Each structure stands twice: as structure tokens, then as C-alpha cells.
Length: 496
Image (cartoon, rainbow, N blue to C red; front, side):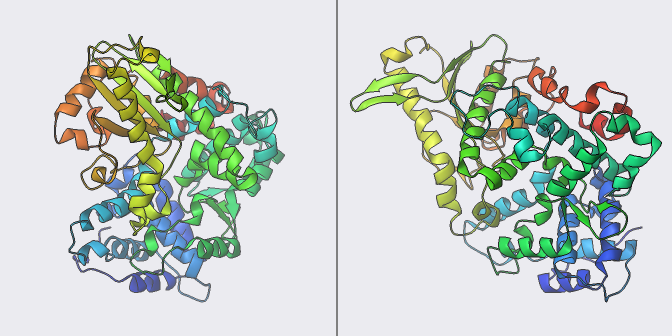
């Protein structure tokens, strides 16, 4: 089936009206089935007319849940394709704006809309245990103390991630559905031997499931703009509760890709902050800094030093979080447990202040530490001064266009090259085996164009070994060493 409606720009209100033409109970299962069909990797590239992207399906589901009613028409595959085609053609401010910042604002919106669905699921899930249960923090935790998992999640962290994997596998293989009644069948015995059925159901209902009324309340509260051109870039409540009830047997997953994200470190972060407040975020930030150090220690032939306490005129101060010495360069690593906010996703007037608030100090910290090393500050005597110095800012979530000319000038200037990268990029960088990482970073920095790209663009085509830290995290989950692994193999193998 193909559909080609030309290139005419569409209005958001016409698109919303087209979605509302159909009963949610008819349209949502079609969306869930399409999402399950084109869920793994970039399989949407093989979808009809390349229209079945997860972000388009997610928005169609959001509009149907938020605005639809049951006194409408049925829907079929042709209707869904027309809806997705209208989504692709929605008008954007970029088509109207003529100022020099228009491209940068569009890139912020488009990357926030699309690239969040393209993060590697294996890394996201493996990192959860690797960071939260297998990494030791440097400060006394206020929330992440023994028993926090059961208090917050209603299960151990291993079980919680295992339940997310199970829900995801079920959605992929059952047309976007998970039916709790399936746990009473003989074939589910090996699953329930690992995680009791009552735990699976209670955790699923508490953390993963919503209904139409609750969805609409969250959707309305989350709105930050009344601009119809920005509506689709707003927060989608399916990110917080990826399953909905009331649309056929069991629970429906309109967008299968959002299920594992709920058990990622970011998903745990939002769950924890809702329950414990800022103290949970501070504990997580401490663990994240230590986790980055564990990743850096995977670099061969490198010396990794923690932050240095040094003297200055008004007392003591701290250097960057990690100093990595390789044969080719000194890498100054600053860790920021931050994520793009709604102001960056919408590219509104507060976007510049927001990115400065979150990342500005990291640039200054790197430049200050580089100067202390170059000036021979005594506390840095073990850091060599005979090789180039580069900076790396590692964030918990990607800031997709932060190195590009559309955003980098908004951040502090530095005397040494500085790159912002996500933790998933670092996890891949430290496993390269066919070239010294220091040399790759130097070559990238010397290229005026490539140095403005995301760090991941320097990694394709390289040879990698397994990431031992991630593998240990993945191996802590229940399906890794049990007979039930066969149940999940179809969905797990492409991720690994």
C-alpha cells in the first residue's frame, strides 16, 4: 500500500480533525500494530512511504487519546497512512521565520522530536543496573539506600527492568498488547518462576498503565505553549505511562518503543523525583559521575584520575570530575546529569538561558582546569604538559545539536577544544579497538566540519569490543540466564 498526497503544507487543526474522525478504540489498535511491526532499529525505513515513524505514531496516539471520542467512524490501514502523511506535512515555524536563528530552532525541535526514539535500547536498559546497583557513589546517599528499589518500584530493580522487557516483548509479538491473563497459561510458568505473576501485574499497573481520563489530565497539565505549530513537540504522556487500558483485552501499547524507555535511567529518574524530590536527583547525579569514571577506566593504556582538590586565594576548589591521560592527549572530563528541558524541545525564547544554565559551568570548569595544568599548579604535577588538552562534557541524555554552529556560540568560549557527548556515545567510544581514542579525538578536532558534529559521527566503521560494564548490567536481569530467555529472544537479539 502506498500513499502520495504531494507536498502541500498542512495545518495542525486539520490534522487533529483527521485523527478525531475515528473512534479511539478503532484507531489506537491500528497504531499499536503498526508500531509493533516497525519497532526494532530503523525498520520504519521499510514502512509504506516511510511514514510509520515512532514519533508520528506517538503523536497520532496522543491526539486520539486526548481529543477523540467513541461516536466517530471506524478506521483502517488507509486511514492511518493518511493521518501519518498529514503529520509529515505539518507546518513549522521554520517555514515562516526569516531570521538567522530559524534553522537552529528547527533543528532543536526536530532532534527532540525524532532522535529520542533512536537511542540504543540495549545500552539504555543495561545502564540502569550498571549505574544504579553496580556503581558505588562517592557521597552518602539520601534516597538510594538499601530497600529503595522495593519502596519506589514495588520490586527489585532487576525485576522492574525484567518486567519492562517482558511487556516490550509481548507488545512486539502480540500486535502491541500485553494481556495479564496470559500469565495464567501453562506456557507462562517459566516466566512466573522468575518473577511472580502478582508482581508483574502490580508493577505494570502502578508504573506503566494509564487510562483515557488520566492521560487527558496529564496532557493538559504538560502544555507549555498554546501555539498550534508547537503542539506536537510538547511532552507526550505516553512517555510516562506507555500502556493504556480500556481498548480491548489487557493493556494496549500505542508505541512499543516507549516501554523499555520507562526502565531506562531517565525513566527511573522521573519516577524517583516524583516520589522523593530533588534528593533522588542528587543521589542519581553522584552515581552518574562515578559511572562515567567506570566507563573511562575501560580505555586501554590510559590513566584515569578523579577530581583534584587544589588551593586558591579564597580557599579550596575542585577541578573537572575526571582527568584522563593517554599517549596522545590529556582529556578533561566534566559530568553533567542533565537532560534537555521543554524550553529546548520547543526552541522558545528561554532556550539559550537554559543551555547556559545546564552546560555553561562545565565549559568554564574545563577551561579553568586546563589553565591550572598549563601554569604548573602543584596539585596537578602528575598531569603531563607535553601533549594537547581536550575537554569532554558527558551528559546523562543527549543534547543533539549542541556542538553545531547553531548552538555552540551560545556557550562559553574556551582555549581548548570541548565536545559535549551523551553517555551512550562515551560507552561506544571507550570500546574502540582499531585506533587509539586519543588520536581519533585529535583528528576530529582538527576537522573544522566534523568537530561540529555529534561525537557518534566519529565512531561508525570502527572496530569495537564488548562493553564489560554494560554486559554486567544486562546479565543481572532475570531473562539472561533462564529458559524464559527464549520468550524474549526475538526482541532482545536485535538490541544486543
